[in-house]
Amino acid sequence: MTAPAQVVTTAPGHLRAPTVRLLRAELRWIFRRPRTLVVLAVLAVIPVVVGIALTLVDPAGPPGGGPGGPGGAEDGGDSVLLSSVGSALALPVATLTMTLSMLLPLCAAMSGADALAGESAHGTLRGWLLAPVSRGRLLFVKAAGVAAFALTAVTVMAVTGIVTGLISNGTDSLVTLSGTTLSLPEALGKVAVAVGWVAVQLWAVGAVALAISAFTEHPIVVLASVLGGLVVFTVLQFLDALAWLHPFLLTDSWTALVDVLRDPMPGDALAEGALKAACYIVIGVSLAYARLATKDG
Picture 1 (tube, rainbow, N blue to C red):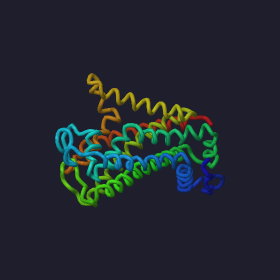
Picture 2 (picture 1 turned 120 degrees about the vertical axis):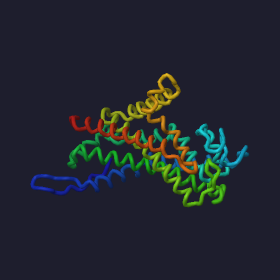
Picture 3 (picture 1 turned 90 degrees about the vertical axis):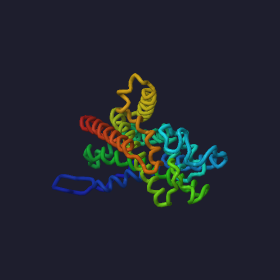
Picture 4 (picture 1 turned 60 degrees about the horizontal axis):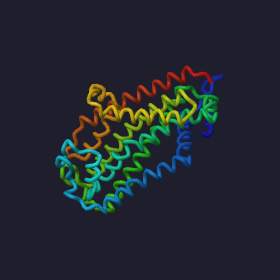
């Protein structure tokens, strides 16, 4: 249960719980949960395992190579993973690309499910309203908690990925898909762009989870709904007859992450993906607020 926030008086007969204290209490509750720590530990181990496995692979070509040539349009998740052989830059981006298909969205959905439905199921959500906390500020604090967890999860993976890549291949192996070698600050800048972009995509998933979480008291329903939606989106992407629908699917832009590894880095697909995720965030948070504002109890 989230620690109660200190209540301050703002006017005669009116009490208000400070937002900063609410945020601190929410973040303490999130990052002290054993489940959260286990998830972060698993995410941290994944790039290490992938890096060790790739050191045993005999690369068929230069690190910048891939299907269709360096930086070719056919580069996908598999080619990015193969390009990680001998490239310390590609490893963190490759692991983010690989886990963005399911594992990272699962973590974001889990956080969104726990934020409202989980607390409602355990009866602790009423404590927030007795603080007293307006439902708008309640949603803001919960959304901030989901965003903080998603950003932390992505950052943990990126840090362990770049450290593993540097230990395995050295600082002279920061090779892009275009075949150019970057300096360490330039490579870290590209990894930071990847972290920020993936975090925005996960915030979109978390916002959808929050919206569903506001309508139910069962976290498993939220997880099943979000993951089921991601599976449906993925299937729809393979149907050429529904090509008109693809630009509206959140998952349609996720393959654009490989553009971070190109030099120069094309920004059109990345910007489109970020804008699409922002739209999902606005819609998800708006639906969650509409439900909380009209929900009794």
